[in-house]
Structure formats: structure tokens, C-alpha cells
Length: 61
Image (cartoon, rainbow, N blue to C red):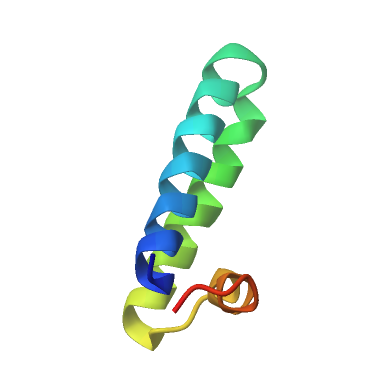
């Protein structure tokens, strides 16, 4: 798995989990969804995301 695919996987899981938690537990979980979206937008322009460092350390190419 590549870093880019791992990043998309992490973002997708985070969005789905935070939407479910926002709907079922507390609406403040939607802030996590907004953070993930903003981070994806930022990474589209800079080609860098903090999660990429973690994924590279885990051995993804």
C-alpha cells in the first residue's frame, strides 16, 4: 500500500466514524469531520499532511 492510499483510507475512516459519532453521540464530533476535510484540502495544495509522516514511519512506500 502506498502513502497516498493509506492517507485516503485514514481520512475516509475518520470521516465515517466522526459522522456516526456526531449523529449518535454528540454533535461536537462533526468538528473532527471538518478538521479532516480542511486537512485534505490543505494537503491537495501542499502535497503534505502530518499523517503522511506517520504512514512513512509505519513502512508504507
